[in-house]
Image 1 (cartoon, rainbow, N blue to C red):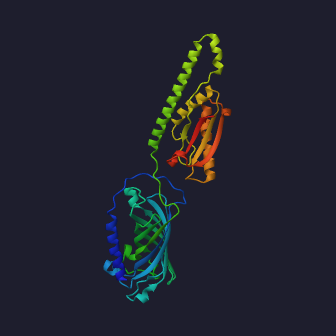
Image 2 (image 1 turned 45 degrees about the horizontal axis):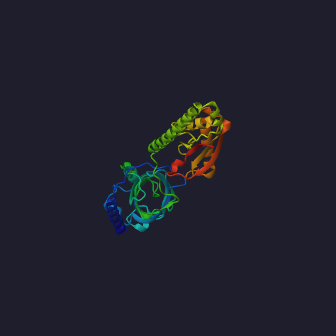
Length: 384
């Protein structure tokens, strides 16, 4: 068992040194995934060293590998990353342990289980920025839960601090190296009390674990970079400003033609009823935040107003089509959201003085016609 601990320690040092050669990536924000994304499961072989509250001395590294206090075990866990840097994990550990009452490993042998809920902080992502191709992730964690000694029929509450290292194998699979320290109430080993004069951690039953195993990511495991909405709005506004300028040019040309006709003799003005005015009527988009029917930028409505003015002067109808992002939310939710977005824009047109009976509202549901995907969270206004 001592050789096992020494091997795991050397592997920790070598893997950490190798992983530190990775070049940091540029930080960026990511879009929020659904609740069912970014789950993972883990399975590990565990090397454990036990220290009981009845022992007089503090934990020393030289004594951690004594065979009368060490044993092999297993751990399994299921967890979820809520962001690239913060996650939760439920972990079951144990099976073969030691209650250190002597230096006889057979006499000390026992069976136990611990069940804990742990908060994970991926410092690699928090400090260096999210990178799904990163070879090594450095993840400290803390947790608390319940321990049971099956051999001695005793229970105890406990806390754990640990460091999880994951090493990427594929997009779905990673190798684990998990080193953790736990302390439990003194009843955990099946014995009661502690030596007189002991304080602090010496009054607790303690476990040091070194775990090696695999992590498998369930379902969608990556995070998409969120678009630069400020840049997107700037680009959108510049495009809409250009379209608005084209509309104004078309209206000016229409006024020029009318003035030219007014200057003609009366008999020539009778042909005005046959005059066809060509007007540029490009559609206008109004954008919305994720899962909301609140307009992101009121500036979009300036172009909607210009288009509505053209439609009003020419007796045309307007069509407002609502859309949602098909990559987030269910089909039913996206259909409802697209309807709400179309209704919001239709209401704004009514506030501008446009006749509600001249507006057709369409709910297109979730789509992926535009790239990046957030562009699909919009309502489109066009002249029918």
